[in-house]
Image (tube, protein in one colour):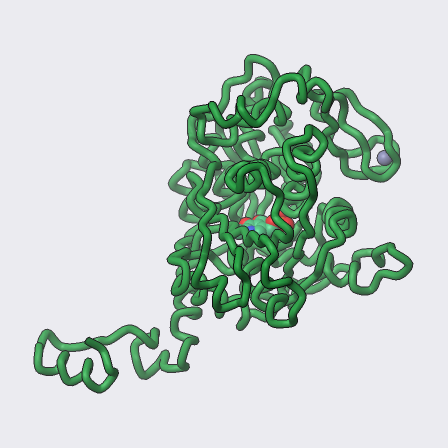
Length: 430
Ligand SMILES: Cc1ncc(COP(=O)(O)O)c(C=O)c1O
Ligand SMILES: [Zn+2]
């Protein structure tokens, strides 16, 4: 890979040759970061070249990705998700320049497709026939889908609480699914032992440094879609911490090659019932975060119910380096954000998918975001993945769940126009 210099430990700085799929530092156990030859990339890439490209997927940014020469790239169209200017939502939050990036439109309906596309390309190039990971659900479905499209087998470990929609995706994509009777931490440990034993390609995001590189494409797109401008703020939900780390890496890379001229502040949003990353920042002193302490996984936002974040160090660095803001939200605030996004923007996100927006709502309410700031909220997963939570969100609107069949704006009625007219006039509809 001419564009990649090395994989460097973020803790001790030890360097490893790029491309040999060393995942964690052999000296200190720290996670690695992929370091690019920015001068070389500058000589290969500029705004005009990018603007002329017809490939509207993550592969339009090949110069900034850790892909070996001659690799087979997955056929699924990952990335180039829409960036909507959400006027109505912006008005409601008092933000004049609010955008929502809907990553739920990816092939398996989450941002994780970006990372899995890199994983399957690298696995295929390395001659592996089986890929594996543990996941709260979305990394799993994205890996299974990406693997299926490349003719690879997948073995997937999920905690038993993973929503049915995500497990169903796995089964449809033909993965071997191990539903672990335990929490995410236990699931992760079992997967790590099995991957080691059987020698499968390891897509465990927190330890495979190539995967943040896929996730960072969301930032490359945001900047390009804004006309090579960095937003002032980017709100994103945080579980293991790989996604926020990827988002930060994307902006840093763009800045390093001169494609943007400033960096955004990140808004790291976690569920109050499981916020070990944010808590470490909040409890920090003298410009340093406190050590991450594990927490219970107490939130309905299953994808970010990560009590022992695997990529905490990278996430903490991203929040700190970006002069970021931490916001914790309740499950009720997450459900409210699902309704708000659906009703004001036509975007349907799963609970963890809209947690960034829930945090933005709170931050805006607290006056933390200037009205004219350029703000992007990334919706990281589609609402249909977890219909049970979506139904909760819909029916929580006015507490009429039992009375009205589960949703405040759902009318159950006999096929009778007179009854319908009566109901409409009672509700002021029409
Ligand atoms: C929809 C969704 N949002 C956010 C996240 C958080 O990403 P990370 O665990 O990398 O912090 C995940 C992770 O599974 C996810 O699936
Ligand atoms: Zn190290």
